[in-house]
Length: 93
Image 1 (cartoon, rainbow, N blue to C red):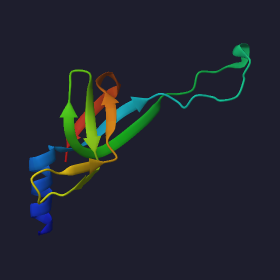
Image 2: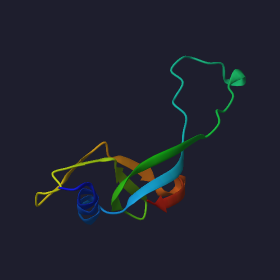
Image 3: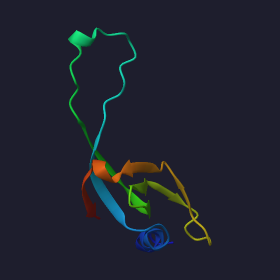
């Protein structure tokens, strides 16, 4: 399958190809820490790229990897769920 038709097949089966700018929380600190010495970490700015495979009022799901595009059903791996309140911007690619 030529490259352009592979991308078109992916878009028709999985949805729009987008990049999403969003905010995430910092990783939890595993060690014990004195509360009076704690400082709140900065927000983690993230950028994710993938096919928008699902959307609800609460969240979107992006899949960066698709397979079996020439078959009746396609597969996805590496799916990430992003809560809508964390999304700052979505741009179609």
